Length: 113
Length: 114
Image 1 (spheres, each protein chain N blue to C red):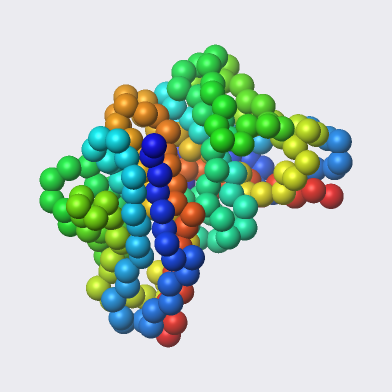
Image 2: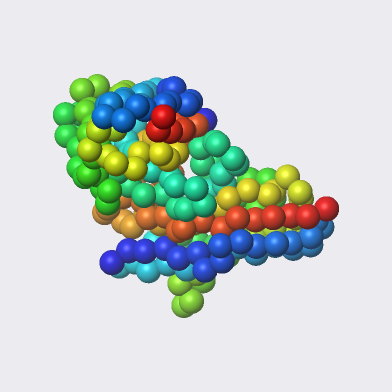
């Protein structure tokens, strides 16, 4: 069975500090993993994806994510948080040969000045 | 939001009324999806379609109906059988045969009950 878990409902970080938003997954076969960001009353915007290759994936707005196959994790990171990064973040999985996307429950990121 | 247009942005439903949410895409994508998002919660799949004139139920299809008469359009009807329709509805699309492709999302429709 395919699933995605985001263990933290909310993450609080001070501006300028590094941030991490956690994601773990379960899949039969190789995973295709994605991170999306959602601002209030808007659709989801794509940040980055992992398909294959380097375990560190770089994406939009200075975000990056680290794929760890042994820990089945795909954590989102940013070296220095901005107040404007405050939003809802979703991890998603698209299993190969399936045309459904599986989303985590979302993590609200609060960056305080 | 990536070539997908959802309308209206806000919609109000009276008790016993059916309402239809529009979703149009110009990305030439085969697959289209409808998700429901409740406050502070994740996305739940309502229906999806991989080809014209074909669609499949997602995890919470009861009280909803869809049609796919054209590749570009995937309207969602919230019927009177859906007793708790207040939510944010998101339409998305994706190329069908490219598993490494992302989902493209519309800007959403907020549905509320009067």
